[in-house]
Length: 364
Image (cartoon, rainbow, N blue to C red; front, side, top):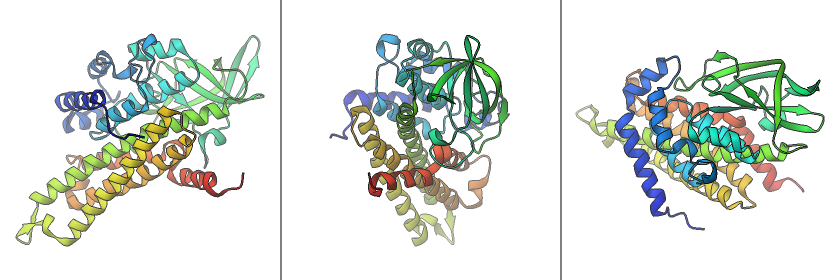
């Protein structure tokens, strides 16, 4: 097991960092938070040209043919902004789902940028999202229809198609819905758009292997959890950097607040949490790419710890800034909102900790 990045992975990181530094800043993030679409087609097209929408797509389908580790390298840098738009929902979540479901045409469209996708899995309720959804699909004539409510479809507004997960007589199955229509849903993170999709005898097309796909969707969720963990680490890093920089320049009682013991202790705790989350993320990415038997355990550790660490670190960054941290012109609150939103995706940290405990101590 080697957690040292290759020269190619380091080059990818520098390329992503350089591009985003040149194209995206705090003003862009604030503008997109108020924008109806939440991203600019020009920036998306540039990311397509650079191949970032095809990081996880196989090379023979027009992608870069890379793995979770490389996707985490990209997402960590994007999390530092945080980058507005549907990159996570389309280039990561939808791509991983299409990949595991063996959907070559969908992968080709995602990698080429000709389409954006999303997944509609999570519904109201506590626990693993694969266990809590109630949407059902049934045969009607020669086709299938779905009925149910998907209350939060991340990236649904920008998506050309959505993969709906629904229950059938065989168990959990995947269905393709072209041209999804839904109502906008407000989220904690103003830099991302989500929709509420209500399905009433909605015609859908079954995709993926025959039979129950529950185990397959657990695997998809594990890979997505690691990817979200990388974004959380990036948001934590940026929040830490902002807090340290502000503490060095903010003068109170005749000296920088960075010299106060309380600030020193807080920043050290922040750094410790970030480094532990980074280790968990690296292990989760390695386990996913290697197909290691512990990949589910590693994914649960990654997102549960990275989620709690990011919420704490980004919240502490606001505290270091004081009242300034709550203002619109300070980037700290955007990082906190991204951390809170990411933490709740795929069931949240409490569910993941419970799942991890069951894998460790529950009887076989």
